[in-house]
Length: 229
Length: 248
Image (tube, rainbow over all chains, first blue to last red; front, side, top):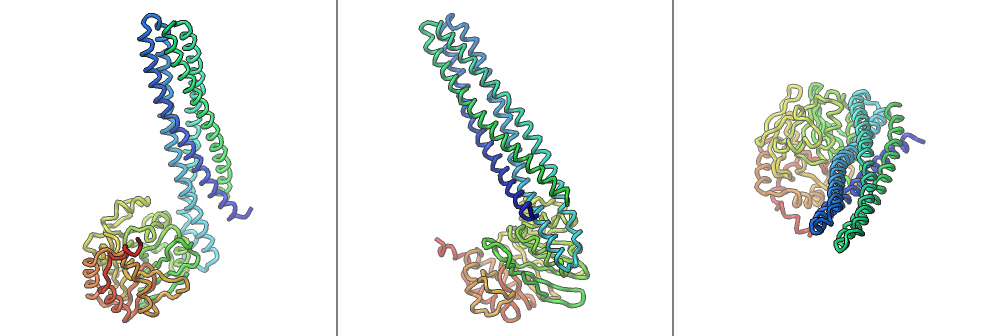
């Protein structure tokens, strides 16, 4: 592959990585209303348990777990949003830095061709600074992607927990007489919310896998470009 | 890209480059100036990040860029100064002269305050290799913090966007060739980009106090000899800040 084509593909790859980061960010934002709905559901569950009096004792224990589940989902979203914010910033900086690196390469090729008063070496410093910045951003980006993978993995466990709580709520609904109707409503709503959480979490994991693959590929290419010169 | 020497006497020299044929269509054409004195260099409006490699490589043919000690930015626009971080990466000791009111804006390009020498509203002096250049206020023409540079030895007045023209692609000369025709390339630019007739009158009065043989804008063509006076009269009679109704 010619040098120009090679580096142009790398520039395109950075744009792709940046777009993937933005998509992942958008997908994560979709979890925010889910967490809010889960909090609302836990409040409804507490009210239903209170209305049921002593028949709602067992369900009341479940409502505490539903509340904790909502809190865990919220915490998970807050943490992932912080990390994804950093990732988007790093990816955008990387695209800009790579563009600057290419400008130095272009300049040096022009100077190679010209009978210049200025030595090509004068621009070495700038090019080296940009290359170091790219390496440092790559390192940070890899670390942040690792953190994001770790932060997203508990969501699968939370989904399982939610499904389990929905089943328990249905069991309580079956044995709660007249109050069972409102318990069942909580159960079915919870099942729906954790279902959505599961679907979105799967989409995010898939996006994150694509992003990590693209980053790994780009880092390999970059190693060749930055270290070869 | 055309590069020409505008003035040379002993160790004092002015160069201009412009008409970059390689630039993308959507990027406005810009002129860049390099003043050399006693082996030291000053770049005036070095341009955007888009044409850094062209500007640096062209001036490199004629001057050791390691000896460029300063950059002057007439105002804060990206076509004037967005290449700044690349210049500073190459030479971290570079001094950057900018209108005072734009300091906290230009630092958004990633430039550190230690490189910046703010020029107050009233203008001042830049010394290059022992030679003084006058910095003349040109505020509101077009930027609200805007400066021109006058070199009394070369009798060259760098006017930034004042005198700018949007030239047709086949206009290859760096100089105004037919003043009457040239006004048609300048009129819209000045009506649309220049907001203040008061500021215009003050700046014209400042230019007329000086002996000017060349008036050098950042876009378009350079005015030489009698065309300098013609431009000042034409500009004096132009109602600026009046171009917006044409674009509605």
